[in-house]
Image (tube, rainbow, N blue to C red):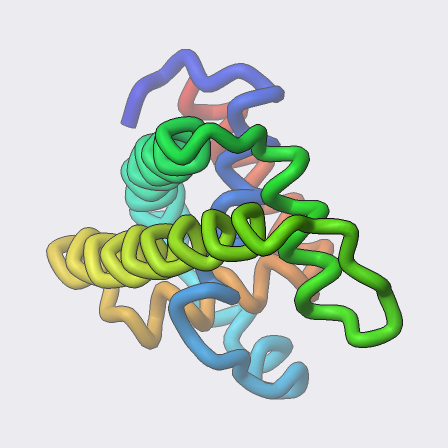
Length: 161
């Protein structure tokens, strides 16, 4: 693990970890997370962060690919999001033209494929690590709910600098 992780990057690592856990796996119950807290070793926490650095890179690449798809179709990300929100909310009236709706549908299909690939690649990264996917999820979910584990992680990262 690189020794020069600054606080901004550490915060981003944690946020990506939380997001990836949610996107890849179903959540465990809160009481299981509390029980697991004491059982997470420092080595597991460090491996969790190492894996998350890889996942961040993968996520950034996927985001760039999604933006490229939107732009290739001649739409801005803002307009695509507006149309998607209108289409997903029956209470909102859509101001999109039929052409924009078709373009947004085509973009959505490609974005879903990118997201699926992202999930597969993320799972592959986790499986190649020293953590099982289930253990990775347990640690991520516990980090969401345990200030004690968050503090331990913070201290470990400080020691690594």
